[in-house]
Image (cartoon, rainbow, N blue to C red; front, side, top):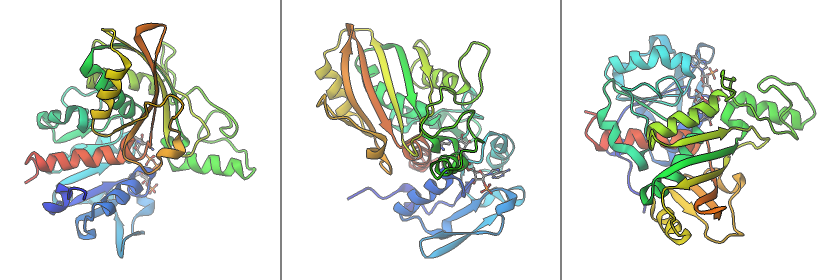
Length: 338
Ligand SMILES: NC(=O)c1ccc[n+]([C@@H]2O[C@H](COP(=O)([O-])OP(=O)(O)OC[C@H]3O[C@@H](n4cnc5c(N)ncnc54)[C@H](OP(=O)(O)O)[C@@H]3O)[C@@H](O)[C@H]2O)c1
């Protein structure tokens, strides 16, 4: 039987900012699965959605206005309305006594804001100085989840990752765009090129060194979470998959560690499912709606301390909403919510 959520046990009031979006909808799905009462949930989206209804089991949640919402009436605020909204309202919510778990990139690299994947560094939540905890980027979360068990065995020195990121990682309008293109409307809005029948090696804008911002995020966030000495190179690619990100991760360990030891480390790590059958691997379709990070095709390449693996996860679950709700549960378990 699954453990009861601390959010339910302590009757915590939660507000979701961005409740109509892909991440917001997944927050609601997970809260339903955890049997959180509708009376403890408030929902906010943009002004144009104000007053609209979101069905939550047998109850109706009314979308409230962000600028007039009383954040002091809630204990936890889950933000997923984009960085510009978090920049103003996450701080406001925190100042009014609410703990904020922010899904946007706005606070991630702020030294005073813990960047948390609970299986790896939940203890950092206790170091929060501003009542704000940042959720890492979806591609970062699944990669650090797969690297951490290795890093526990022998320091990961170098990582070269190529991602295959689904369109849902870019929000609901990007999903609509792929679906429209499938039905023959090839209009391009959210991506620089047609995404149907294509792959696009650009996610977010380019920086001066030739990396994109998404690639930069994967690098600096991984260093902040795992080890500032890790050398990382990333190539982030959008693919015409609806949901679920995949990553080919090559990494160098300090020591020559036998594969069997790495498989054991992965198997023992919470939240990881690993295939040690070389011809059995996971695809995005296998992981939609699943909470775990799936690792397969782990093998040596070139030398004994160099390895490759294939990492797949649901970007809306562990990559976003689930990770944030796990952080919220830890806030309660640590007695930080009173
Ligand atoms: N998608 C992912 O896999 C993923 C993973 C990790 C992190 N994130 C981050 O999470 C955030 C949301 O992503 P998403 O995929 O859920 O986007 P989305 O599907 O486009 O949804 C955006 C949400 O933000 C709301 N919103 C827009 N402007 C607003 C405003 N001015 N005030 C209040 N609410 C506003 C929208 O409300 P309306 O319906 O009223 O427009 C909607 O609820 C982004 O910062 C994204 O980078 C996403």
